[in-house]
Length: 335
Image (cartoon, rainbow, N blue to C red; front, side):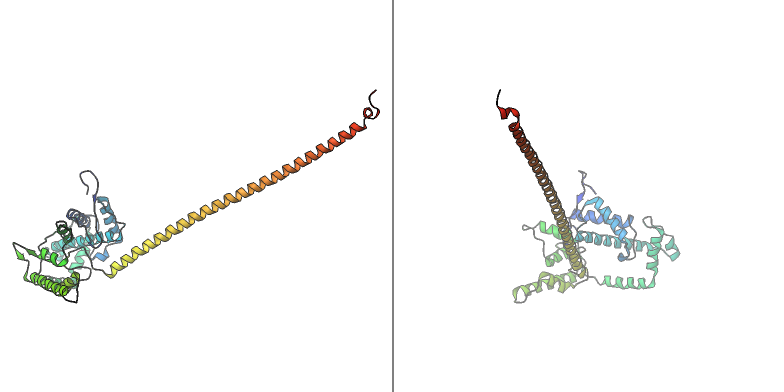
């Protein structure tokens, strides 16, 4: 996915958002993972069954398409979460194809170009399992109880909320209460459901109550009280943002441990370099001391030789004087 100039599109996933806040980035990244889920990796019965090899292959392809920092744990986890969502959507479409068949024999003969026969049969085995059918029936009933559908269509909530903030003079995103209204109310259509309107009014009442009295509740606490909570999901914000969970804490701990390990490695490397420099300096000093000692020995030897030469010269001079005094010409005088 490249721009006209040939450079990769830059993808930013702010901490706490779970996906890009820019609508174009969000759509492009989601579409790319949809392509990857359908064409480049196997489709597991459950997300946990997807191999690390397939996950890494998906991330590598994503990195080839976009300028994205997958070294950041949060960015990497967010990308895997988007891939998980797109894999689930792909599995849902295949489930519809499965249900269109009239018999198991017919189902087994279906050819899905994007899947290997083994992968397709593994999915069929799951969908045929009576226990799985029972869970699906229960989930179908639960979905019919959902009365507060939103008006956002396929648009990512994270990007929509960020876009609303960009249009504000102070560039501040709406809080969760007002964003809930934005996603469930249209001026021309009204509320998406009576239940959605009731939820909003209850949240407004709680906000007025707890901002005017001595007791206090944050906006997040108010929304969670009215809409309820769900593991791994913040109601009213769509896919992407996640509550502070044990996994998030573990990830943060892992990041701190990585930082600590890198700091220790850098300190050990610096200490090792310093020790090497110290050893080199000591070697130089030792060599210099050896050279000085050698030079001192040479000087002492030269001094000794010089003294010997001087002594010999003095001895020869004395002998010459004695010889001169003892010669006949010096005793008898001139003729």
